[in-house]
Image (cartoon, rainbow, N blue to C red; front, top):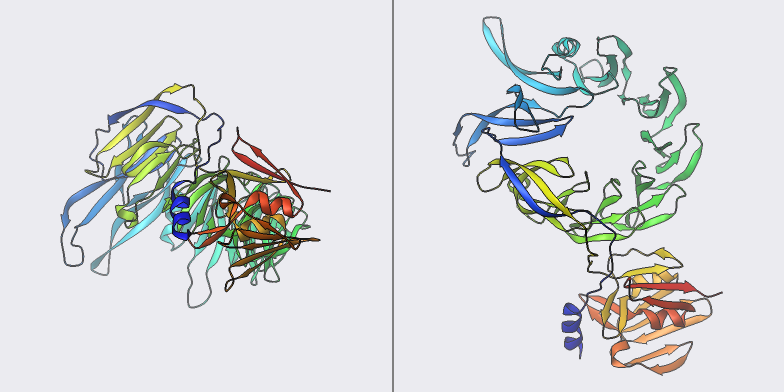
Length: 511
């Protein structure tokens, strides 16, 4: 009987429910990029950075696949070169500028020395001379925003690393007196002095929130994530606690939700500190376009901002959504050999997993490189169709009107729905115990109790013995003890409703 149950549960767990509308494309058109591109880079403000190979690969024992040299430039979204390839690297454009590196040779003392200089260029490829000058003085640019440039002075024998900031003309806004300094966010600079973090109001240029925090992040959506007495919480612009310190780690808010970590793992909260996704996961990325990449047992899936799982855990890499699309991969090869695919917001494949690079331009166009020959193309998603309702392969569970997310979704066997005993018990707020020797599961909530005897078709509800039909008996699946949702929930005084159209279970606590 145990073997039969395991075999059935491995093949029969499929639930279907309707989706809201998302773009569906009837065809994909490809146009080759008429450049000998070695690698595609990032996209920003109508420009794509790219690398071309210089010379031939050099094969050595240390580089059996061939060491190559490249230079970087920029093209537009039609494949026309805008800035000729000559840089050792090139980042994407942002606010009219891009960061680049250039290899140069310097001559002094009768010899020559090669080094890389780092500076900003404008859309015409002209250098921002202040960045060249400061780079020549041994300073490193670490970002720019709103015509302000963050600089770091490397550690020396006389002092530790220090941060400062200039405008694009090279005028100093903040001297090198900070142990850490961030570009402005929501009108505040995050700064560190004497081992503590605080905030400087951009309009005043002086400390406005005390430097008292052990660690901190930039303001986002009116709140800043800060560490105080070993735990993370959230403060407002006045420095008042909106969420008291209580988390081991935390991220800034994005789209009104934030990932936080407790001893049991990562989860997601809203601004009222309500748990949206339970803290049981390995990693969670910030919310973008209503989706968060979530990692469980080494695989990534996606949740929406209400805490509902929308794409199952199956990817070894999953990037944030942009233009309603995400770049993902199930390829377990090393990252530089990995092939990628493109999916929409419900996990439907838009482009197959055949590409080593995919660059998103907008929701209908991008650039990519085939893994087979590194050939670069533009792709165009065409002929959007009116979408029929699609299906997802799991069932939803709601408790008192709120979606319950867990590491295993509800599953159907026979005419009954099952969940792992601990997942169901914790969702209901019950005390749970498991007698491994006797294979008995115990649930207690208030004055109600349930004992389930595995494989014996017997349960005790408030001490009264009942016989279970075969389809209502608990069983094990992949090492998890699965228990019937209706039986346990009704015994613990919950109303159970099944919505066949949505393929959803609604549990409501009785007064």
